[in-house]
Length: 302
Length: 303
Image (cartoon, rainbow over all chains, first blue to last red; front, side, top):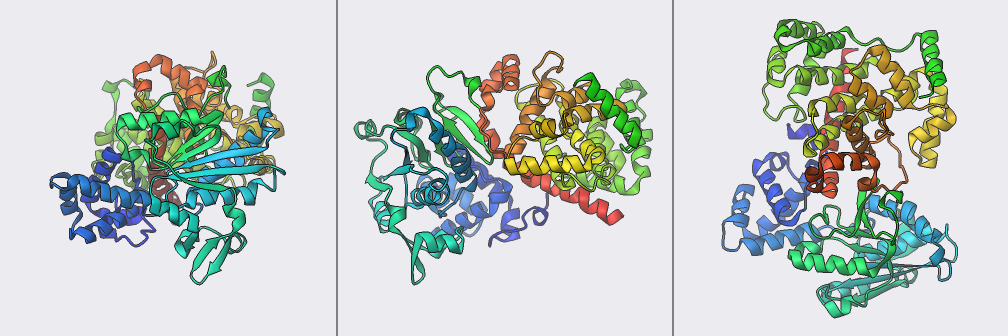
């Protein structure tokens, strides 16, 4: 298939880059190692991010870069750098609209209808591996913008954890460049941020429901205390763990959720072959996982 | 379908006389396919397709697309028939000629939306059937392509009412057939079945059209409608749907059609990563859009 008929918006990647067969090999390699799959409409992202790494190490073609990732002594280190680029290279507010819609339109109304929830009227969310905080603040804004007006008296509590102190400092500072807020309308920027020159600082109302904490997902003792969540998010973190650590971590998430709770991975991740207690559920445009209520027939879940 | 629904629809069809007649080329290809291999007249098939120049050109373009052949370079209709086989060529002729056949429907679902969903379901059905080791994989493309043909029938026969159905489904974010049942008293499965009978479509395709929303019943007829049911759902969940948001959560593995297929192909089902399969569907979105664009750009250019 010719590329110019398919890729109408390359976001800065050249047609020549996108037609390079070595990029397809690179795509398949990244997929094999990390499970992250770049469909044809996401090729430009892979091209841009690989280019960024190639510039860094002085590689001048995708074919040469593929060699760097497969045959050189430094291949593992370079793959890790590329994965860092791929997983954290582009994060911003309201990044995954399908997941946000699923939470707002499908999951929240279900939680609010649960009989056991009526006394406290509180929804508890855990953002595991919260990185620089965009996901947690997005959830807080989503709640203020779409949930709170519909469900009076309900509150949200967001626990956001990461291992990286630098990331956590950035979370607490809550100061973001225009790039991070590009998906927000001017009205929403105005409502939830204070503009400081070119930067945007989250307002106190957005910050209030979030607790930022340092947590190593491999710290078995501390993980046992993470309990009673309705929703857990853990995007693009498991790729760094080996299969034993993956399974153990997901098991903690499972135990940390209340029955009927939902778990979301990154857009391109799957639990297949890692952990089979969750039930895979499909929402429009996104997939998530569901912890069944004991005694609930799988077929009864709709 | 209730007998009175069937009668009412048939009466409507004969009153209006407005359902498209199946193109003779598709009839002939159907006859060729049901003939024994010894009687196959390739020259005749090539002649039939080549007769309509714009259709032939379109078929060649589609035959060379990534969807149908990974090796490129099919340069003539004859080559296409030999390289891809008559069944594939029939799939291609269906894909190219049906959109023009229904182009008269001015209201109802946008044609490009409809055919994006139809082509998407055809491809995903076929891919899913391959992974699940379902027999007769080659039958799935056509079953998937035509499963919702009743939507076009409704657009033609009941333009005002069906427009209301679409608007109501969109605003309530509800499944189309639920709203059809409320507003029209029947669904596109019923009206599609009437057209399938008029067109004398193959039994698997007819069963899929009628039962793709309830494919596991006694009369539903095997695995093909089950696969199309799942592919239809996946397409609607993955940007190849009816163009509106359906606020629903699905546990596919708990759906009866999945269980039917799982029971028949336990190993293949256990080895299928449904989450990964779903993620990779986004690739189809791009290919399907290219194909729909190519079909529609040609039909507008030739008019």
